[in-house]
Image 1 (cartoon, rainbow over the protein chains, first blue to last red):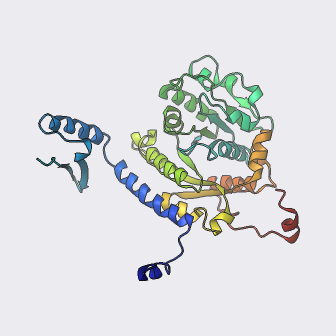
Image 2 (cartoon, chains in turn orange, blue):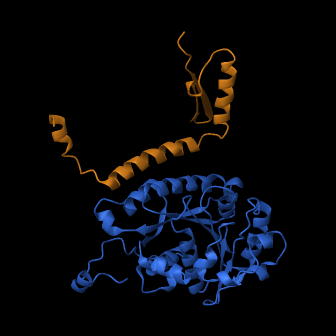
Image 3 (cartoon, rainbow over the protein chains, first blue to last red):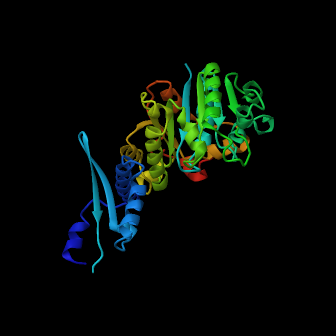
Length: 85
Length: 271
């Protein structure tokens, strides 16, 4: 046991219920965020990967698509990680 | 104007049918003409919980297909004057329910009843979607347990986006939380999510908390909605929930550990 553990134990006791609440809060917030995105994003991502694959070999998870709403305008953000040469 | 209520949850086995039967019966007990409709096509069970399984002649799908009239298919409850059941079909045809067909039946029911209770199947497939599509209010049945709370949140998302009210831009479905199988002793020990925790995560109005109770199994064994067991904690908790649904202010009960008397400690609770 190091000195940090000593201080950590002073925090309110972690119960199974508090662990459940914390995990739930995180996953529910995450899923609510996704809910507001349009249905076509996964399809868009898939088709983008197919187009890029014609030129560079990438995986599905190397393309990230996100839609952000800022007032009246929406920003479609594409993040493509190209493999090392 | 009839009120269309859906009892839904996403997850299975949390108490949708028990709650539909109890709440429907409670509304009829208080003088409101009520029909409970089983949307669980292929896995009909409301009839058993209501105790009318041997009187099902025609079902929901027969009415949709024009093989029977609504009057023929509605089963009148033997105990209460104002209570009717529309049974689900046991067909294996997944497409037996259609939006148009369900809409017509709901419209006809709405003309003859004060409350139409739609008992949703589990999941997010056609049956569950159609059960909530026409609703004015939703009762989201949740157990204090991670998978049930997560699925309930998912259902809340669907209620807000995939219902008729959402599609036509009307006022959104009014959502109520019904927390079932609640065990105050385990909450105190920190083993179970508390009612405040679930309320905080789902952020909807609390309609009621139904304690985990032996009366529920006893009632379903006998085909009597648990709300008719007025001595039981679950029956009383459902009664309170129905009163709240009708706009009454009723304090929540059964949230704290019941102190046992000496005799009860010695001989164990019988209830």
